[in-house]
Amino acid sequence: MFHSRRLKIGGMRELYAVMAFVERQFNLCKRYLGWEIVFLFYTVINTLTIAFIAVGMQKQGHAINPDYVFYLVIGALMWGFLGIIFHEISNSITWERWEGTIEQTFMAPIQRLTHLGGVCSFAVLYGLLRTIIVLVAITCFFGMGLPKANYAGAFLILGAASLSFVGLGLMAAILPLLSPEKGSQATHIMEGVLLLVSGIYYPVTALPEWLQGFAVISPATYALDGVRKALLEGATVSELLPTAAILVLMSLVFIPLGLGIFHLAETYAKRAGLLKRNG
Amino acid sequence: MFAIECHEVSKSFSDGFWWSKNRKVLKAVDKVSFQVAKGEVFGLLGTNGSGKSTLIRMLSTLLLPDSGTIRIMGLNIAEHPMAVREQINRVSVEAAFFKKLSAWENLSYSARLYGIHPGRNRERIAEILKRLGLPENKLDESIEDMSRGMQQKVAIARALIAVPPVLLLDEPTTGLDPVSKREVRSFIKEVRQDHATSILLTTHDMQEAEDLCDRIAVMSDGRLVQVGTLDTLRNLVLKPAEDKNTLGLEEIFFRLTGKSIYEEGMSHVS
Image 1 (cartoon, rainbow over the protein chains, first blue to last red):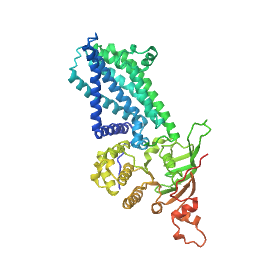
Image 2: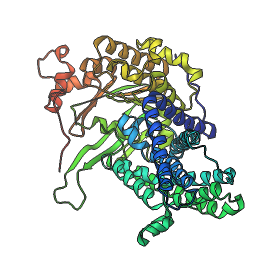
Image 3: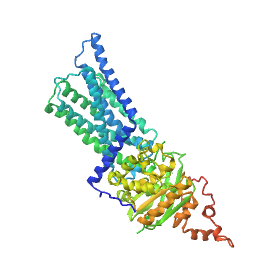
Image 4: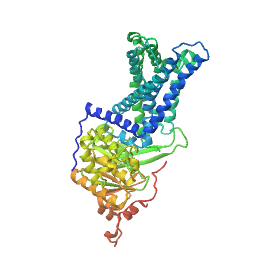
């Protein structure tokens, strides 16, 4: 009666599944287009507001570095990008619980790496797309001129930072897996701590000393530092390599660690009966 | 080789930490053993909370049993979960979808997860839905705009896209109108006949169980009370001088378990 043309298990099939997650998420974005526009508008306004803090200080006669506007804008854009990656990955489980599809996804014949790879691919693409839109809007508004900027260097750092944030997102994603009620709340606390300690809008040295230790283990600290050096000071790729190396090293630790912890959490969830819909 | 083989399968849940004095342990499934032959429709009857869904979730690799062995098409689920997932699909009582997406978008997503190119199989998917009584133009309608019955039909279509050898149907017709129920039943028969699909079916609809199942297992408080054909079960509870033909499955269930099939049960707590 019906005949299926299934691909055999292997790389191509896993790629199909990665595409399934990316396509699904972009389809959801289309369906929630109204909210997407609202969030995007809010992000643009938020970035502008942050930039105006520096403009306001200049107008009030404070002696500040002329690049301070860009310093803040880069912080806002980078946090927007990294925050999306972290948020999308860490909340992917919550989202599936809420929709009730978690059981369907976890009983599908795909590797967990493929599942999470699909979620992460979407997060990076979506984050990049949104950041570009915000960047274009901000450029139109301020006519941002970055004469020294080394864009290739900035992209190098952005790529390395994305990987390490994927690792952090994977670690955070276990929280909703273990606790359907409180897991999602805990991921927001994690996100908040990263925002506080990573020097998004101020140098890390502005933090109390005891907090500065946390900045050392946050990939956002190095990402911000690297992108600012690339865009504001025109640091060359070779000058940025040590920062990129730290980020790659972090991702080499965070991604396998995230996958490992996720595997343990999934096994626990399957023992405790936590892989089910919620709400 | 059996399509499904459960041997002494048990599963308990607890509501507190192991050191807690007030910790309660709920034995949801207690040493359950049965086999489902290839191409057989095997009914699992029980009250709500009797352990049917827990058992189905274990068969679906979503829950790990505390003890016992489960094999699907000869594959041990603890050792080969990925290979088992290739062999099964499931329709649960609640049709779970991304509600904002259309039926087609949901089915396309699911098809990709099973290694099927959705574009090349649209006609086939539309054909399945048509057989279930859902016209093709509904494919592009958002799931949230569909009735519960329509959603359930899309869920059945989703389970059948990959033509799995084993189908787990957890109350697939609950909440459907009589016409839809009939359409789904007839489709289940068709699938079984054409693909020799082995089906494990849980239902509260006694007529459905009588109509579809080759054998029926009666579950109560997490335990399997009896397994057999309708005739075997009937003979077990038949009273002297009672007319066999007047004994329906609902009454058989009551006599075997001491409970009405519609009553809220709960597996034993310790």
